[in-house]
Image (cartoon, rainbow, N blue to C red):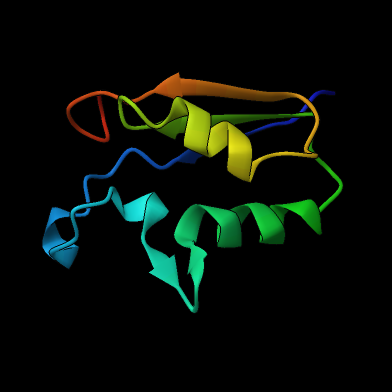
Length: 83
């Protein structure tokens, strides 16, 4: 059996009042998406990872996922359901 993990990280962060999308806002000096990727790296039961990010954030997401194999980055939709 193959297991894929999907991290839906395309939120705008508007409720946070941030100019950055939510996944790229820092908590304790580290982007939220990096915290999620760090936690995921401790779990070895997945085969591929899909990161769903806002338009224009594919490259930053790939940079945060450096060293993780089988990562696919795609752009999310207008709403979480669209993503």
